[in-house]
Length: 100
Image (cartoon, rainbow, N blue to C red; front, side, top):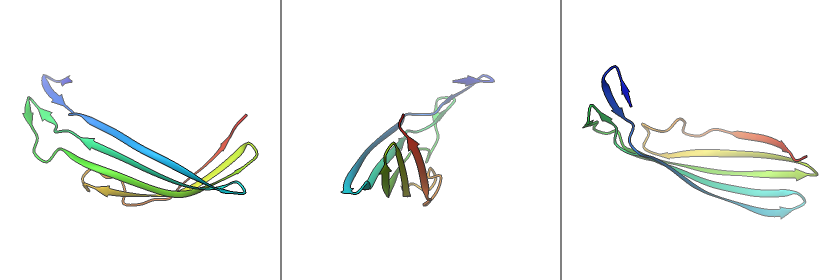
């Protein structure tokens, strides 16, 4: 896009992923997910910016528990890849969902 007569191109950003869930029984499941992101080279006034491309990969391992219409999930994503583009090294994520 153009801002103040300066052209800026963010490059191509490609996000991809795969996830799986293994039912253990009794409402308990083991979950896993891989989410990758590829960043293309940025351009500033049609000149490529050095070291502006990279790749990250988030590996998520966790567990979920389902009881009736409610599902609780707890996981630990671990970030890998180019440190310039990672938002974190690891963290804990959780969630609760209800189906009506």
